[in-house]
Amino acid sequence: MQVIKHPQDEVQIAIVGKYVDLEDSYKSLSEALIHGGIGNKVRVVIDWVNSERLEDEGVEPVLKGSHGILVPSGFGNRGIEGKISAIEYARERDIPFFGICLGMQCAVIEFARHIAGLSKANSSEFEPKSPDPVIDLLPDQRHVQEKGATMRLGAYPCRVEKGTKAYEAYRQTEISERHRHRYEFNNQYRELLTKQGLVLSGLSPDGKLVEIIELADHPWFLAVQFHPEFKSRPQEPHPLFREFIKASLKHKRAGG
Image (cartoon, rainbow, N blue to C red; front, side, top):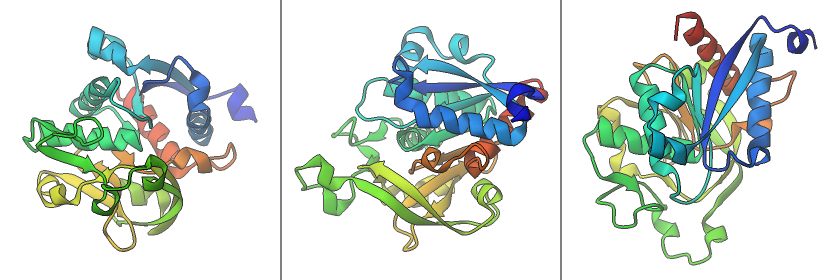
């Protein structure tokens, strides 16, 4: 394809994760970013950032110059605070941000702590005794002992709210995406967080599960509970990756 050999521009995307030393762990993700670049006729340069490095060195020295920041999926509490600090950096500096699965959960925690005033907000996965578990197991999952039995696996439907960045990307209200996770947005905090400006732009058909969040007052800040990278193709980039790269290119051209 000509766009691969002769891109019109390039963008630098920081992937802030805990498995970046094994880049194949994020193979589908990196390919989906490249697909998003093809959809915008640009080359995507990936900066692999170990989230623990941000905890040691600080965010600004490492992420300065990134045109977009992506926080991917993962399990366990290692490197979580680094991911949260990267999200705060993207939110405060209007840098395009894309969170996937655990990346969405970290975005909810960051928002709860720094916007909603819940300074000890966390996921019950990382801090079982958190006074504000904004990410938690569903009530009917808490007594299941086998972890695999609590995972939400496979394709699930989602309803996208019109007038949101998510709808701008999908251009449809009914979508289906693949999942692989245990923990969910805690609905006990839904009213508080939305009053503070968190937009729930994608919900399960019954309205009980939060699938997509975003910020209305940010150029492009969006995070999803599912794995859109699995449905992306070179000649048909996933709409969220296409729009993330588009926003990152706009950020670069604006001097970001």
